[in-house]
Length: 499
Image (cartoon, rainbow, N blue to C red; front, side, top):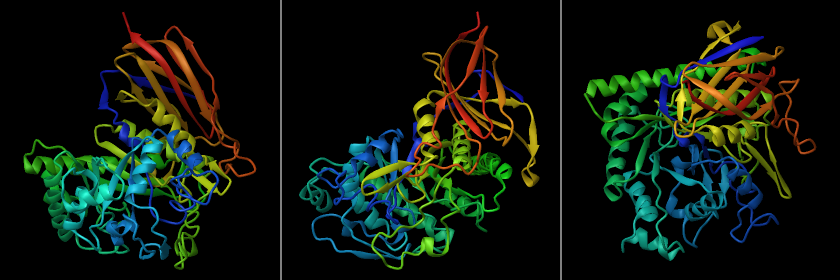
């Protein structure tokens, strides 16, 4: 089939914030213990950090990683996880026993090794503003005060300089420790924000928005939080986990239109509150939990039975999952005016891009789109107009087979195209119509595809779903790309202005 993507560099949604390619680690299952941290493994360094996992994380080019939760954070006292006097403790969220040997300072070491920055979440469930401010003091202040001195005593002479902070997690959810109504959370978050920024005016703050579109309080919760906290935050969070529980691949591969709709919801809500307040201040979306998650969900997969770091939520990802993840990132790129932060949830073992066992690690299918996008999406986000065949997806309507996003670097003319072919049985030839520019040279073409949407990487066959070299054609400034069925393509090139 044939499709066309029409572009003009004057039509764009602004600068792509690299923070949309951030990640998330939670004290859950084997994410931390036996995941990023395993002192017993021969693959770990002197700090107990798995170097093979750290290397894989570095390959994902993540500007920030959110930590330590997630549901976990709402019953976690960070003060118990620093210093030498630590005891294991029960985790309310996942019914596990946390060894408590990995905490704030260990996470900071991990971030430095990986080459990422910390995004810290504070407990606004069972704790409050004072404890949140104390963590800012511990991490960011270079004073002679109690918690700053405690950090130095614990071996970190220089401040950790944490710039991004989450004001709790999913506080709209009845499952959350300390769950409360929106009005109560908003006041608590505002008080915490003012204490925290009072200690460090340079920090950026993320208020907890709806934990999903399925919530009865969706957007109403967010409106209340925005109206109360508007002047004290930079972001409102959004979360979504996609599912193919009905085993309907064509419908699942239209998931991108749902992500677009959610972003439209938030764009409208934020504009409403800003207008109502007659404010010059801007608030953006931090989509700080997103992924596919449905195979290892519910029942025993979420009940740790008070074991120490048991295997939980260890989703096996396949080709169709990877194509849906690519569509999340396409949506984030296209709405660069709204989304400034996004976190893949999660990174290691738990609904993860990377799995581990004591002697090796495995990159799952979803690892590769993330690594390709984060490496190549720089500059401004061009607004693509896609024309070509569509298919009907019930309540989701008529959906283009081709899902596209485009980045353009105005300084050097570099253009990157991110294309997903939703068709299960037809390859697509995609022509790029760049109306005000001429493509002068093609760069790399990376494609990822397979004959079976359920194809996955395994310990025995770790390269079932990996990128390979694709095909493009450049003729008289027009670029054409072959995007395989059940596939995606990441294409780079250089273009110049028409003379």
